[in-house]
Structures are given as C-alpha cells and as structure tokens.
Image (cartoon, rainbow over all chains, first blue to last red; front, side, top):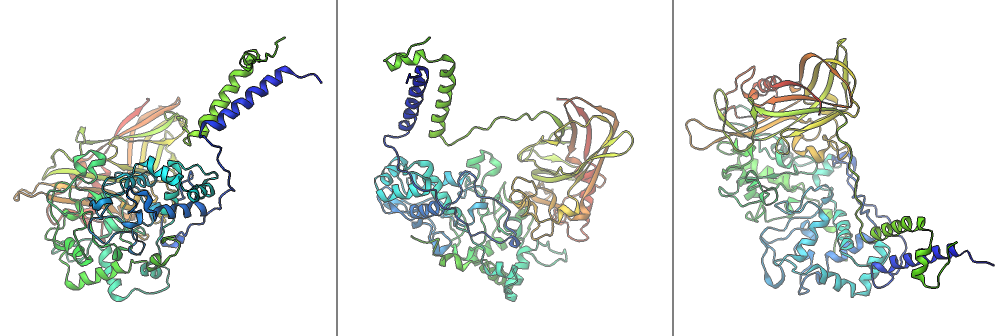
Length: 363
Length: 274
C-alpha cells in the first residue's frame, strides 16, 4: 500500500512535538492518579448571617487536597531544623492561636507579632496583623521562609517533600500526578486552612433558637451592640464594640488604630505606604476570643478583662486613632457589672466544637 | 510534488508550509499551558455607555483627606474617612418622564478614589434630558435586605460592607464621615464621627439642567460633591464634644441636619463626552 508521504511527515512532526511537550516539564513522566474526591466543607447555615462566598474556583476543595494540607500543616520538616511546624504556633485547641505573647521559631528565634487565630479564613480579606499578605495561598509560604519562624528556603522544602515517596503519593492523590510544586503546596495548605470553619458558639446556638444566652451574656451583647453615649446625653451606656467587630463575622474586615500607643508602630502603613495608616492593625474576628489570649498584635493584654478595661479607660490618642474611639471623651464609663457582662458575652462566642473536631487536628 | 527525506530535519522543511506555522503555535500553546497555571484575562472596553462621574471637592478645590485643616464657618476640620452609598438613579426626559436605572447601587470610598466613575448603562440612552436624580442611601427594601445574601462582588455584600452595616438587619450606614476638629480651647484635637442611616435618613438629590441631548456611544454625567456643604449647608453645624458624633439614633437632630446638608452639597457640572 503506498504511503502518503505528506501525512507521514505531518504525523512525525506532531508526535515529535508531543514528545517534546511531555518531557519539557520534568525529567520523569509523572505517575497518574484517579480524580480526587470533592470535599464538602462544613459551612455555616444561611440564617447565621455569614456572607455568601464560594471557595476559590481555581482551587476547588478535595478530600485528598484537604488531607494533604492538614498533613503539611502539622509537619515539622517544613522548618530548617525539623523542629517547628505551622501547628507549633497555631494550636487547634486555642482556635489555632498561640498561648504566648510572641511565638518561638527555629533556634529559639522570637517572632515580632502575636500568632493570629486561624478559622473562617474564607471570609478574611488580608492576612497577618499588618495585612501584608493579600491572599491566603501567598500567606502560607511566608512563615516557612521567615528567619524567625520556620526559616526554610522553599526549594529545600520541595526537595524534602519530593524525597518522601508517601508525600509524592499524597500530592498525586490530591492533584492527579505526583509532581510536587510550589503551587500545589500552596493550594493544599489553602484547602486545609479554608476548611477550618467555626460557627457553633453559644451565641450562634442562641441565634438558631437552640438555647438562650444567660442574662449576663445577653446584657453584654446589648452593651457590645450599643453605641457610645456621651455624658449628659441621657442615653444608656454603650460599649460601642460593633463598629469594628460587628456582624456574623465579628469583624469589620478593616484595619484600625485602637489607641494602644500614643506613638504607634507602623501597622498597615507597611502595605499602603500612607502615614494615615500608621498604627492600624487588622480588626480581628472576636469569635473564639475566649481561647486566643494574649490579645492585640503585640499580645500585651493577658485577659479579656484587661482588653475591656483598655477600651473603657486606656485609649491613647494619636493622629490615626479610630474616630469612634476619639469621640469617647473620658472613656466609656462602664461599671464593674457592665465589664463583667461584656466579658461573659465574649466568652459566649467560643466554639467548643472546633477544638474537638477530629478533622481539624493533627493527622 | 514534495519528497519526504530520510533526514527528519529535511523532511520538516518539505511539509506543506501552510501546516507548519499553525501546528507550531498549537504545540507552543500546549506547552505554555502545561507549565503555567495562570490564564491571562483579555482587557475589556470600559468606555462605551453612560457613566456617572463624581468629583469630591472642598468648596471649589480638590478635596484632600488626612492632610489639611479645612475651614467651616465655625470649625477647622480634617476629614479622615468618608464612605457612602448612592442608588435610585434616573434621568428626566424632556416630556418629564423618568428613565430609571434601578439596578445601579454605587459605593464610594474616598480613601480609595476621590473621583470615581461608575457605569450606569452599558449603552447610551439616546434622547434629550433635563434633570438627573439619585438617592444618597438605599431604598427600604435594599436597606433591610440580608447583607450576607448579596453576591460577593456586589457593593452591598457583607464582604464589602461589614463596616457599613448595623448588624442583623437593622440596615446599612448610608453615609459615613469621620475625622478630627480643632478644639478652640484645648491643644488636643477632638474627633468627629457621623454615621447617617435608617430609612428616614435617605435623601433624594435632584439636579436640573438645561435640555441636553445624549447621542453617540458614551457620555459622563459629571457632578461635584462639595464637602463643605456637609458642615455649612442648609444648616450650619458646630462641632463640639457633644455634637461630634451621631449614629442616627431615633430623634437624633444632628443626623437629620447633616442629611439635609449633604443632599444640598451635590452640584451638577454637565454632560462630558470622553
């Protein structure tokens, strides 16, 4: 049978090109894995007021991806001396925060800001106290490299993971082949961290009609939600917390100067470059705040009582002080009972099921 | 007729040249896609249609946040933050009927943008018009909607409005201005914080103009908001420690005065064809 020589040349060229493509991304042909299983995240029910927000469309959650991210989160081989994992400073039973003012990194190096809690990150808009990371998938790489945290070059991290057959297998199950890349490391950690949802506090259960807050908690909630009352205004005292910590997320998702210092540190100014952002730090969610002591970006307050007293009488003025704090001439004027009720309400925001959730803890 | 050489390199040169280039492109594209997960987004034409161009001024000068002491009749002020919602847009036709843009809700954040330009309609509604109307704030239905239910990109979504919502369906803050004022007798500046909200604080702004024809592919409706009018408008507002904040509580006269002042601070500038 005569060979169509043009067709032969075409096929030779095409197959040769295809071969070039297959070898161009790595020295070995990766092992193929079955399609990963879709992961159903534990999302809050609609009635609780959490904003309607889908997962990142380019990183859909899978059972295998979340499991891989969880394994990575608890793995100390992502630190230079194999001693520190993400979980070393983000304890599941503390709403993934740390109990110390500044966490210790490799070689005993000390961090410069208090470790933030990790939950409901799907709804977070920037990361770190000063907001220097705009995306979770970028944020997860910073502690690995930071000299005072895990201090490991990313290339070394990938080498260490690639040397482990079980990790190659885990990446294969999560992403279809066993190539271990930086993108996949980011995506796996992102999937796990986004799976850490929290919405079963006593406050949430009361919103769902499943229990009632105690009289003290209820009164604390009312103080929390009521605006500041000027002397002589005749209006009832309010603690005016809701401006920065209101709504179902218990955060305004903004950066604020909350009057800690008259000469504040840089804060969000490192991101914006604007003097008007000096001293502004992330207004954190107050969910699980009963678990996340010490408080503030520098961990200066050991207890919720100290935090409430700061807002009651300790505000320090500076050029960028939050306007709603600046108008509070003479402080909030809360009584001892007011303060106790506020603290009781804040404890009602603790989701005790989070610490017990076996899907969140060490694998 | 071409011959196939035994040398593959030579044979390549003998293939129908019309196939080589497109096939090379396909393979190159395949290769790039296999190594880089990012997909570039094509640019979109953002110039066609009817736009609302709002420039923020103080008197007639450009407004500057966080820097200058601005004079009011009775105070010196520095504006640090200003955010608000506009909705209920409509153009009045020459027969007095209104062409409405019911879906348009705009959120202004002066720290992000002092001269925002919002799209009212992707096609220019041809015709002759005599007035422009909008609401500072929201209609009651939107105001009491669930902020968690809006799509993430919508300005009323809680993701974009957590600092503009009064929690659990008490409604949105329509207009927020925060800053500092000089106390005449004290060296320490005072703060002011005005949050206007609640259905009764919504104000409709109507800006009449000489009959103007809209035609072609695009036009901007240009308006100035002269912030001084917020303090010195229909009412003169004197900021003191007792009048330095308002959150529009029931019967709050400060909020009511300032809402009227705000509505009168918008100035029609004309139709601009970019």
